[in-house]
Length: 117
Image: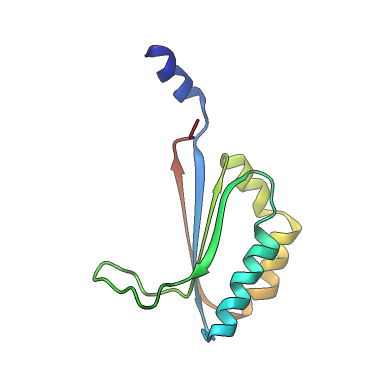
């Protein structure tokens, strides 16, 4: 068991990068355009172990749900270095340039998760 604990300590944690976009124009076409842009510009990067982008589930409104966003982006990176490298890639910068005019707000939540073996 001690060997397993040592292996866990040596394994770098995953980095979960969750981004919530509130759009100025939040019609269905604008929401879909941002989702499509996420997949076009952001999904094909080294170091990503999970990627999803989708619209807020507008019919699912519980008391605990935060309704202040239109599109959610979730990327899990193999480590912090992979996320750092992604931030400065040309496609990521192009994504920001192309879509930021329609962003009323963007909230970013980065968290660590244990690596899965």
